[in-house]
Image (cartoon, rainbow, N blue to C red; front, side, top):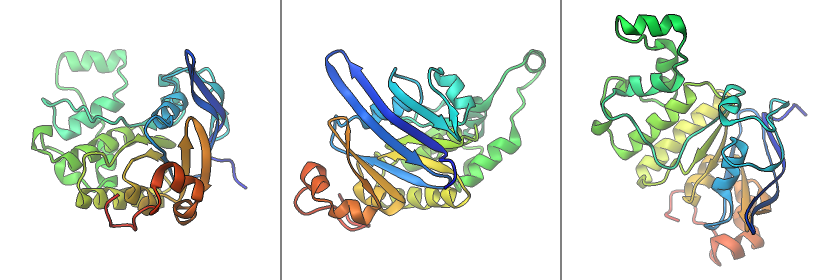
Length: 256
């Protein structure tokens, strides 16, 4: 079997006397979308924070077989581990294209001198590729205040994609979206996966997760209690008891 794009082993995080994560394993292969679900406080966001270097942890994290242990967040980004955040914070005085360009700007002495005497150069190809990947090229020159919440989410993901991550970790990308917007987002993510983009995502919209992800991992009290395909997870009695309730998860297209 090929080397996983993302491999995390025995990830453990403790906050004082609280064991937030306890020996969590995650594997994500190229072009795969893995969903991470569980009750509030299960440790989902803490896991992404640990993987991306924002909280200290024990365990091992590798991207394409390269160890990211003890690397700081910016070094993990350069190694190919990107992320989005729950709240999409855009620069309201910049266009959509400029918001994406800012995220990938790597200033040099020469570029700084050029910008002192003229407008900054946008990495046009990178920006255009990121917009096209999410199907929002038509929003290139729009201002953030003109966007719907769903469009803002897509811009936030495009901003992270512009750094061309090997793995993109997303924290609740469908939060705040209505059913139609969630469906659009799910289709765009599946399209990205078809091009080889690897993703790990958290979301509380179970229909969105089960309809979008290839594989689902369930956390409870900082531990993995189940992992498998969406159909398998939907029927797992441990998951039903801990998270889905006696009726299980709704079918795709129904509300959770």
